[in-house]
Image (cartoon, rainbow, N blue to C red; front, top):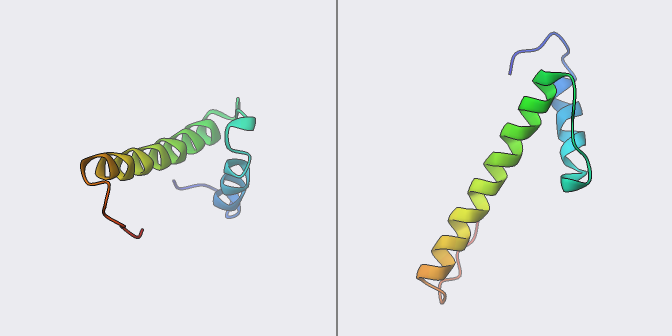
Length: 62
């Protein structure tokens, strides 16, 4: 996400450390960036979980 603030990415990542204990309300572009990152993590864990259900004996490393 292009931004005028070079430290914005670091700031978004700092917010993600709070997991579900924080909700970003504004500014909208920060809220959207955090939502995209959270959705990406959710997608990752859903895929890993689906693989485990299909093949519970596999020991996949990420």
